[in-house]
Image 1 (cartoon, rainbow over the protein chains, first blue to last red):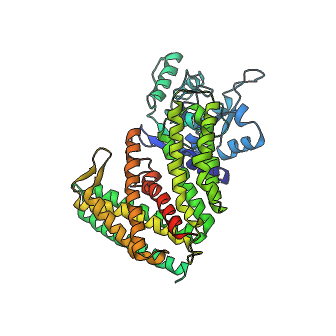
Image 2: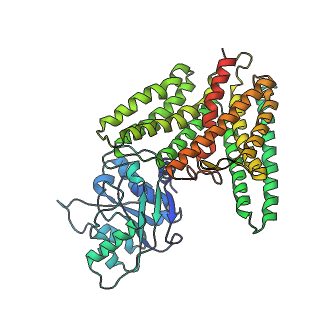
Image 3: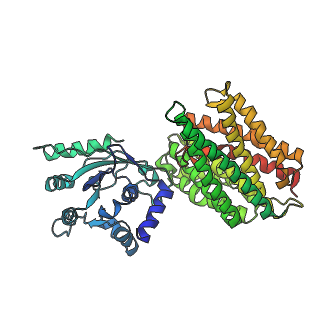
Length: 200
Length: 314
C-alpha cells in the first residue's frame, strides 16, 4: 500500500470504522461492480476501506470529476490514494461517452465501485438509479453485480456539511444480483435498487 | 523505591497474573473440548488476549510520559464518545455540536490537564459546553426532539469526556511528599477498577446465584459483587505502598473505587438497554466496545479524584 492509501485507510478506521459485513457470502476475488447508496463524500472511502487489502489495488471507485478532480490535493488523493476513475457528470460541454473511462477499466479486468444515483441523497435509502449501471451490466454480462448498503454515513457527513463526525459505520455487501434475460431497463434498475434497500 | 522501580514491580506483577490467566485459559480450552462450556472459555480467552494488548498499550504510554498518557486517555474518550453517539439517535441539526464535541472539546479538555489549569478543566464541559452546544444546535433551526437530543449529547460528553478525563487529571494533583509520582495514582485507580470488574466476573461465574439487578444487568450477582468487590478492595489496601495513603486510607479509597465502579456498570447497562443493545461496540474482542471496558472507570474516576484532592492535595 502506498503512503497516501495507508493514511486514508487509517483515517477511515479512526473516524468511521468502515466495518465490512459480508451478507452474501465471503468476498469474491472475481471481477465485480459494487453499487451502493450515496449519502456522503466519505462513501467512496468507506467502501474502499472495507474491502480486503488484496482487492483494493484492483478496485477503482468511479468518482465525479467536478468534486474529486477539483484542486490538486483532492485530485492527488483520488488518483494516487484510491485508484479512482474520474468521470464527467456535467452534460454541458461534454465530448464523447462519459462512461468511456469506466468501460476501459472494466475491459482491463478490474473491479469498480459505482453510485448509480449519480448524486448524494438526503436520507439513508437510495432514490431512483440512473441508467449507467444498466449499460455496464449489458456490456459486461459476466461481471458480478454486488449491491452494497452504507449504514450511518448519512449521519457521519450529511449533504451540505464540510466536516465529518466520527460515527461507527458498517458497509454491508450483499449477494450478487442475477442476470435476467430480456428484462427492461426500468425493471433492472428497480431490481438493483431494491437489492441495496434490502440490505438496510 | 523510585517511581520507575515501583512501576517495574507492578508490571511484573500484572504480567505474572496475566501469564497465570493465560495458562489457566489454555488448560480450560483443552479440557472444554467441544463441550457445553466451550463458548464461555472462548470468551474468557479472547478477554485475556485483549488484556495483554491493553496492558501493553497502557505500559507504553506510562513510559513515554505525560503527553503520551494524555493522548491515550484522549483517544479513549474519543472512541467511547464515538460508540455513544453511534447508538444515540441524532439529527442533521446536531452535526455542528457533535463536531465541536469530538474535535474541539476532547482535545481542549486534555490540553487543560497538560496546562495544569484545574479551574477551567472542572467547568469546560459542565458549564461552557452545557450552555454553548444547545445554542449552536438551536441555530440549526430544528426543534423536533430538541430537549432529548441536547440532553443525550451532553450526557455522552459528561460520561465519556468529563468523567473519564479525571483519570488523567490525577496528574494535576499536588500531594506533599508524593511529587513526581502521580502517574502511579493513575495506575492504582485503573488497576483497582479493572480488577474489581474481573474479580466480580470470576466470583460471579464460580459462585453466582442471586442476581443483583435482573432487569438491568442479568450477569451481575450478589456473590460476584461481594466476593469480587471485597477481594479488589483488599488488594487495593495491600497496594498502599504505591500511593500517598496509609493502608487504612487505601482500603477506604479502594472501597470507593469498587462501589462507584459497580454503580457505573449498572447505570451504563441501563443506558445500553434503553438504546436496545447489549454492548456499546465491538472494538475490544471478548469485552465489547471501549465504553464497555471503561464504564466502571467513568464513575470511579471523578470520585477518586475529588476524595484524593480534598483530603491529600494542597
